Image (cartoon, rainbow, N blue to C red):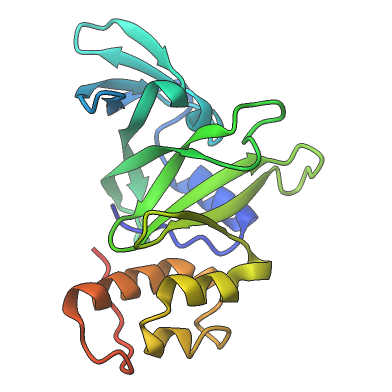
Length: 215
C-alpha cells in the first residue's frame, strides 16, 4: 500500500475524504482475520473514518452478514480505489489491526479499536483518528502510533516526538542526529519510518542517510 503523507489532522482528513472514491455504505472486497488466525474473504461495508475503527460490517462469500467488534478479530482490510497525485485511479488495500489505545475514537466508545496500518517493517507505523465534536473546523484529530523492534506500541505526539523517535530509531545515527531539523520533524515521521526500515534491511553505514524508494 502506498503511503498517505499526513501533515496535519485536518489536512489528512481532507485528503482521505477527497481521494478515496469508495463512499460510505458501499460494499467493497475485503477480508477479516479471525481470533484464531483464519483469514476469511468477502465484502466490507464502508463507514466513516471512526466507524471503521470500531466495527466491521462484513459479508462472507455466501452473502451472510456479520458485524465484528475489535475484540472479535485480529484485524481486517478492504480494497479502496483512490486518486493518485496525477488524478488517476489506483487500487490499494487498507489494512487494520486490533490495538489498545488510551482514548476512544468516539465519545463513550471502546478503547480496543481497529487501527490503520500505514507501513510494516522493523518499525510499523499506524494512524488513528478521534472525533473532536467541539471543533467544527477540525472534526477529527489524527495521531501516529509506532510499534518498535520489541513489539511495543508507542503513541507519538508532536510534544514528545523527538524523545520517542530517538528511542525508536536510536541505532541509526544519521537519522537520530537530524531529528528536529528541517525534513526531520513530526510531519515527516512516515518517511523516516520508511527510511529506517530500509536501513535495517540494507545495513549501510549508520552515519549515512539514505532515502528509501516508495513502494
